[in-house]
Length: 257
Image 1 (cartoon, one colour):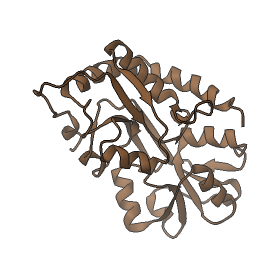
Image 2 (image 1 turned 90 degrees about the horizontal axis):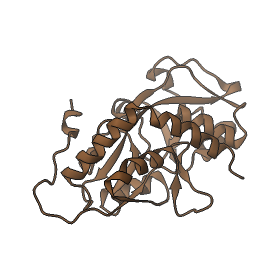
Image 3 (image 1 turned 30 degrees about the vertical axis):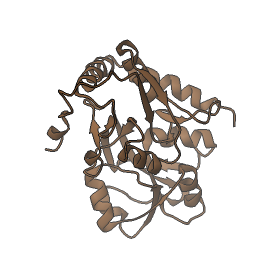
Image 4 (image 1 turned 180 degrees about the vertical axis):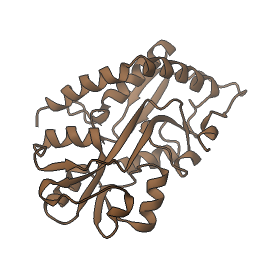
């Protein structure tokens, strides 16, 4: 029911200057949707910000995509208002306290249990993970339901990079890696580890991924949210993100080491 609460309530009515530039960041471990640009390490690139740029261009708003460190740090900066927008976040009850979600989600992201091929175990539903040690990114979410279940019943350690997670699994320090399916596929290919890991068939979740405004952002106005949402709806329904995902997957795979 709390999706209803996401329909923007906002700072309407106040006379505020027009937003000329949106400062945006996100999870730097999220190719092909988002990753650190090796040619310009202070910035992020990917299909998510390419889509956002196409949304904002006719609105006359400049997009400034910054690389601000780990996913955990990006969320902290959004919480205190040092960042206008996050380009890709799942819904959690904690996050809706400090972020407004723009509807509709720009994609849905299945998250998988990744295991080394010689350590496959039977996984059908969440209880099958009990008694095993997992690893994922610090402050990563896989949807409200799974997060709550994991907090009570599962042992999952958080690390700063997904490369570290996969290395821990190969070394036998953990039993599985929790990571999104598409992102895992491209990351493992890029690392030369695609033949060493497998994603178990059943996803742990399949959540909508949203653009979100910090509630403390001066650009977070009812008018701008509505205009962005209109453009977002048109582009997502046209299949534009699928085209951008294919393009940016190719770009990521051909990066120089």
